[in-house]
Length: 159
Image 1 (tube, helix red, strand yellow):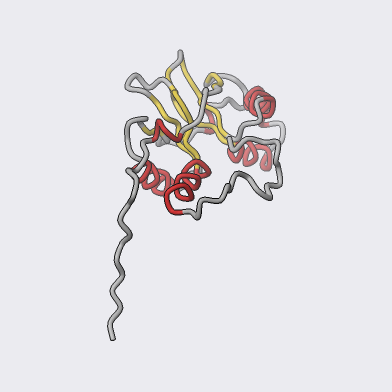
Image 2: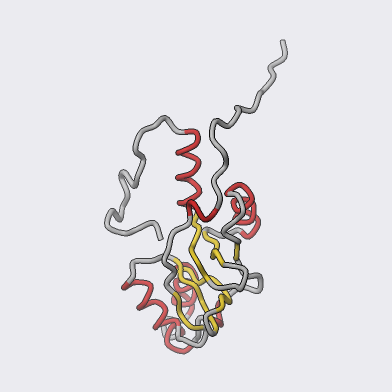
């Protein structure tokens, strides 16, 4: 006896990034120290921040980037700049692509967030793994409200 797996038919269209991203974007200048970036990140209760140069995105800085620098050299936060810790490949995505394509980009980058930029590379939002999980639950969930139940940090936004 053979079992055939059939993909479920989507009842709703796949959302676009602009429909699920969040903002407004909080940014730090590329030449700002990591200490300044950390202060801004903690004050705004964020996990990710855009790094900009004259308003144009140059990268996405995450709390994990700060933690990595601090673990190796706590004083490095005061001496290194936001631009110093950015990867070689910018983790950007356009607002007008679908979340499946964005998810593939996120997985391919091995990241937990993408910076959403417009056609002039100005940051317009952040798309996180948490945002994509919410889409998955909305599309295929059981209709229950799954917003941050049991979160260790109930007062912290997802990003």
